[in-house]
Image 1: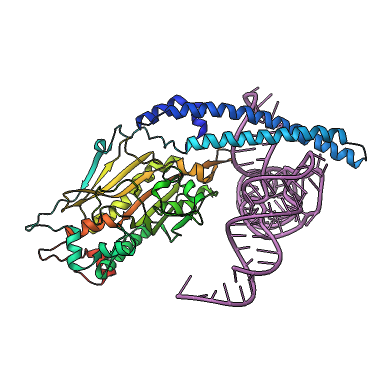
Image 2: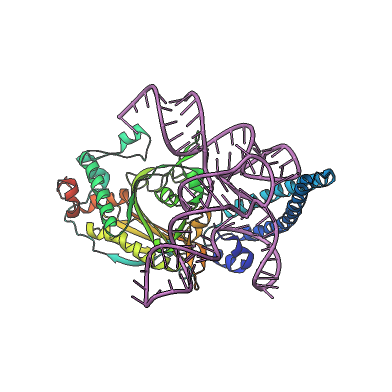
Length: 424
RNA sequence: GGAGAGGUGGCUGAGUGGUUGAAAGCGGCGGUCUCGAAAACCGUUAUGGGGGCAACUCCAUCCAGGGUUCGAAUCCCUGCUUCUCCGCCA
């Protein structure tokens, strides 16, 4: 969430940046209004508490001296009741502010290009070339059906549509991809973690997924657990309420998990086969770093994700998202898209974001910064996340790009030591 | 699932109603000493929020949320969680 102080001290700037996101900014004045009441109540309550604490000490002394303190006690009873009421008022006010603040997105970085929608995103790099096929390419559904490596119908029988079943060499290929990606990232200094895939509400809140996106999540109502939409959620929460030492940073993790998304309201759009699913696999990258390094780390993380695609020899491009398209928690974001020969378009396979302090504020993830003169200060870390990468759309690109005239799939060189076969 | 015992500062750990925001030890940081280091000694070392130019000061926080009380780390209730024993189980 945004720093309430930034709204208190520089509302004009906050409003201007939200406008770049094409956001409604009326909420800011509403927050200001409630916030001014907050300070009033705090001051009143604090001074009453001060009085209560002082007189309580006096009562203690009187009692020790066996004096009668009943008058003061009666007096303080009234004060105590007032304090209780003020504390209730304060809690209500703070809840009101939070409920407004939870729906305000992160402010975009200044260098992010202005735009209204995905159409205004900017293509940054294109890697590799499109292959020329001297036969009609088959799409991933046709290929996987013929080879019996993916089974969307039976997946739907087991759970519902959008829950794919991988079979035989398809399952092995998926596992090989995951292993390859993890090994690649581990060699670059990311520490592998394997996390819970069900998380509690506090974890979802800390990662800024709830309450804003609650309807997009699968929930276990009985325990108030959520199925994670991305490993970003559990990995960030490894360090919730913790304070890093400065020399520990950056702390970098990679982790494979299943990801679950209800994709509420997206029916009918790009839903066939792997293009949009409710359960998919992803290797996630997370980086906790000092604020001054976060934009440099973002570029490194982008390169780390791209390295996987280069090793797999996948034709991809990097686009920089415009202010109208960056995610709720992000200040700056790149998408990596892979080429689909059958769809004849780019498919989003990764998103790499700098969320700066937007998540760390709510998750209370900080570090001890040493200032000149040896003094220390506790400051919020910046948190970056990146998919490195999601396998489902990557699998579409891989199957299509590596198909033969006969409808077989040539396994990319780097995956063969994991698959132990070179063709499907 | 049953029975029991716990959750206190970076860590270990004392504290069962009134200067305890919290003893002591360890660790960290600064200093004295030293050519340098170790040892020893001295000092310092939580987070959030008010107020003040500042020195400083006030409020809150001893797992979380309620309650009792003039006053709660300490008493009561609920939840979460850890450990031990039993049961069940991949």
